[in-house]
Length: 330
Image (tube, rainbow, N blue to C red; front, side, top):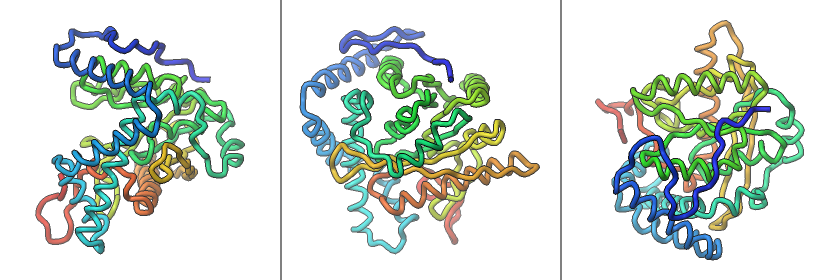
């Protein structure tokens, strides 16, 4: 069993949690606004909260600069669709993102029981994933990615997770505290810039130790990573970390990918899981790239089947299309 890496209690709304540095007035104001939204959301029916989120973000999203990148990426992935069809996908994506963000305000309604999640072939995966062996589990920003760790918890594991810290330390600490029930093995921060490299290396060593002891670790793997390897994805190449694959290859872990798909406009989800075969040749680095490529091939299948549920602005490209001189949507 993995020992908890983080022990926290959920801060009361309106009471900013302690952090390791002085926070600015703007950060305090943002946290207090969040606390007010959390307090209000938790006295309202779920459908009201998610409906408000879908309406607000659905209206605002198409006017944001991220929408231009989303539309450019949709054109790359779906060149045969018309501009109107791609715009419709983007609008539905924004509404779904609004629902997901709204659900984060009432996260305990979903994390306490997991009753809103149906796991496809649950008995099969329970038998496989409940075994006390090292497991690396990867998901993407699609559907409800924060709930994608539920199978491990339901199957009696104590998963740890890796997350990208938020810039506001008050909101970041609130986020970790409210997600702690889903990650009894702890939430560990990944490095996000050059100053964080050493911290990221410490996290990597700790994750390897956890996995080596039979732990289960969850990653949201589709962040663009400028220090990552070029991986084929949606007809181009983008840079993604190979850390999950490297850990799996290093300790002999099983690798699973999963997606928690939203059912219609409701707050009910369908979890689809696949196991990815881990290549084991004499070249660990090449194996990690091959494994990461296989992980993203599974992601691409799900994205193409349910394009309105993926975060389309989240990817940049390192290879241009034929005839271009520079990467698109970067």
